[in-house]
Length: 187
Image (cartoon, rainbow, N blue to C red):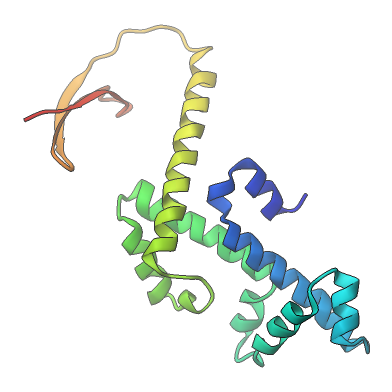
């Protein structure tokens, strides 16, 4: 099972159906180009790869001569996989760790020039971020359950604080770990 299939099986929303389609397209294009370079027609290549002929023709027509090494790399299967990891890492660090929000991820992709290879619109990244947050919460609950089984009971102090997003929220947390034990919105 490849990385895209494994990721989709583990967490359908995080890897993204579109990312998997792009990865499969890149793989098919590499194999098709190899067949064409050895004298096969597009029709023969499509038949051998079990791909619709007109779809393959469209993909081949959309391929432009590479302008740079980046174009070659980011349109290869390895490049698409690397971009997928980079986008997930950017979402994790910018939105979950730094609290920067989805728009910062979109700006990062635009400023880095990666918008040529990765969609940088808010909508697609909002959906990805929701899936990443859900997967992170699921993993945290799983790890909390697993790790708490061998942990000895102990007394902890609770510190109180408040946050203001989107309204006043009272928080009770363990000060050493920063673990939030209770929270409630209040006036």
